[in-house]
Length: 181
Image 1: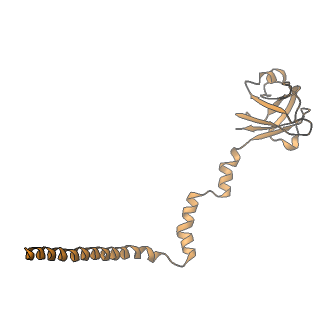
Image 2: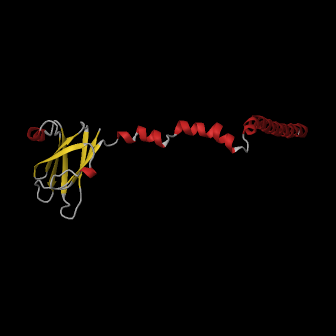
Image 3: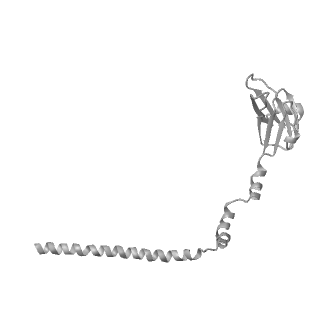
């Protein structure tokens, strides 16, 4: 009996070093494979920054990013095509306006614009001044602006109205209008 237990212990003791040897062999094999795979990649990296920039980094950057000229051509030209600064008296300030030919004042707080092109949307906001700061600005583009077209002609296809919030009535107010494509 004692011999059998001793023999079993010897077998168990003998099997442990074999498992350790296999682990060591796998670690060594992994290190050798890693060294073989890394050396081709490491051989191409050099101290020559010019080569790295011209051959590897710059071509990727040219595909990924826009130059200023490309960006301006692609995005800036499609922004607002026209804008108008209308004084509270209904006069178009030509120095602060573009692509708006004329403005007519229909009544208090109602302005009709004749742009040089047909906009798809119009955005307007009241210009804050000391005299009046409470106004809601609304825009209408043809065919909703039929009142302007009926009075001043078909070319006046934009109507801007300003309503004073404190009284709920139309009121003269300076307005900045942007005409969008």
